[in-house]
Image 1 (cartoon, rainbow, N blue to C red):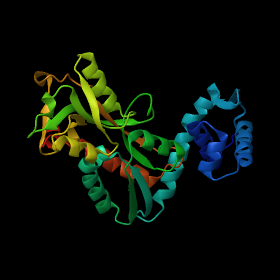
Image 2 (cartoon, rainbow, N blue to C red; image 1 turned 45 degrees about the horizontal axis):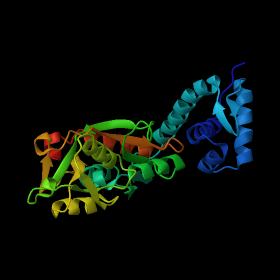
Image 3 (cartoon, rainbow, N blue to C red; image 1 turned 180 degrees about the vertical axis):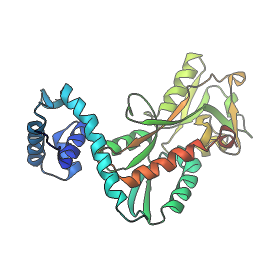
Image 4 (cartoon, helix red, strand yellow; image 1 turned 30 degrees about the horizontal axis):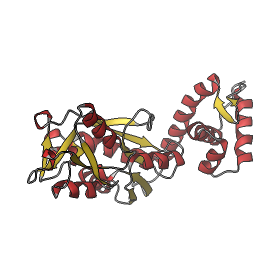
Length: 293
């Protein structure tokens, strides 16, 4: 006998898979934990296979559960698209984007302008925080999208949308880069660029000291432009008055910077998909020569 899967149950199932917890999933789908458990019991009965296996106090997906997850994500997304196709042509509502301030100055003006022209009735909220904080917000379901610095460990679900060179920079009018030890202005200790800078200088045995620490790109830029310190920036974040340093200056090459896009898989929406398309197109339009100006 043919049976149909319940869309609401599948949405809850996806939330459990994404959050790794029945409790956190209940918060995402705005249900009680007992209601979530009952939904999953009924889903298992409908599928006729166990989709969860106990792993200590946690629950993990069985092989059948992993197979169902792929279908569930597609069904939930298609459901949303079907509803949207019968809605008014002009989309309205609210969408929330997170972006580190390292990228905000360069990318946000074009993204916001393009999105506003296309969807003038949509309210766009932007939150500027470090990538690790934005990743946590995505996991908690409080952001729709986030532009982040990609790492395999911290953002495995991110879609890489741009790769840039990471560069050593100093002031074009000062000589902080010639000092010993090298004074550095970097992000907080969890910052990947900070880790890369210190690792590279240590690797060549060049003395250095962290003189300024801030999660704010503007504050780090101020320390560089005033001639107080050397720092590292992706090419899109270079500002007038900065000098790029290289091996000839005694600064070793840095690893590339991958920029990723994280999506809230707990609450997918047509608005978020539309904004994601504008972000991807906007970053594709930024050329290396533009970024280095």
